[in-house]
Image 1 (cartoon, helix red, strand yellow):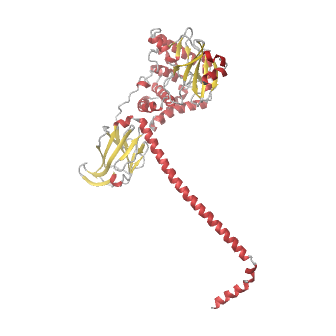
Image 2 (cartoon, helix red, strand yellow):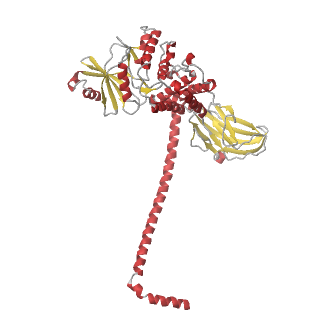
Length: 541
């Protein structure tokens, strides 16, 4: 067993002890994906616990240097401590094994509150003192590259959630203005200072689980995270000292949320994370919209509260955000929100007709956005015509249906078309799917433009994000296979032509050699006079 090998290599025990050694999986760190999974073992020798072993994947998700340095630093705290590291072993199974001193007779901080051993406010005081020690540690060397990387993580989360560009660009402007206020000195932290990772023992509270340790400019994100996961602890206003001053509270909430989304994307099981994208995006959009409406650059954090609409990731419900069908028009190739109309989508799985009417306006292109959430959809037909009312059609301008193979109906971002002849079948893979309507000409003078769409929305598919992503990947895979087949065919034809060209070149070279041999031969020179006389006789004739 590789753990026994690790124990021997680090000098904790020797092979002679194996007979009296007992190893068991004692603590699991919850649900994580395969690249971020970790676990802890307890090791007994002759019924006496000698160490615990933390197993981590050696794949770059965890920074081993940050883990070790942070844990060694926390051991030196005056009011707290951490397990001593007894040894580190790199296994040939792709994992790293960290041997630690065992912690005996302990209770998790949140369990102590539940059992009545500690009052909620006593637990809050312990957390406040812990963050005070973390905050007052000697700062590390300034690291502009690290700061840029941390800021990039906010926008990586926004990209994961498909946040519209106007909100992302606004956040960039706000950070340019307020980054100096929200970014503190570089310090070490576990990024996981939550009640279940604080053990109340006979003496100082013990900090455990350093998997997510990092250097950071944003300690206040750890504070927010501790509040977020502290169900049993009542936080008092003392935590405000760790929140940046002179900053819009909504910005603090937003950046914490983006940080948490990015972290969960890295460590959570993939299917679980995909299913939570929609409510996570709703929460982020709530913050973005609130920030856009309240930020004046002067709001102070004296009234800050962690305002997360959902209690915990595990409690996030699938929200019933209104799904709409939106028609955009443009005359200059730029689609704008103000140049659009919306209709509510019915997601009962049946076909429904949706009717848009536009008054006399300049139009060169049309775009149809089929909803604002992932879903499976089918379009039976789309008809564009002009007339005074929807029932009094004067002249049809264009239609997209199986009759013309839906020619001119093009998929845009967020849409993956599926196979089908009678219906235009597709899936929307994000919150901003787009279909482009081409192949039509609108007269300059018209009273009213009408667009009718007959389509259906599958409500169940809109919730199965995992299946949607699988379909998208399968579609892309099939597309790449077809492209590879076409490329292979072209390569084959090119190789055939190169072969023929080589053969022609060889033949031409052979003829040139033969011609030179003939021209240089003795018989050719002897018969030169006869050939000259023959040419004269041909001219005379």
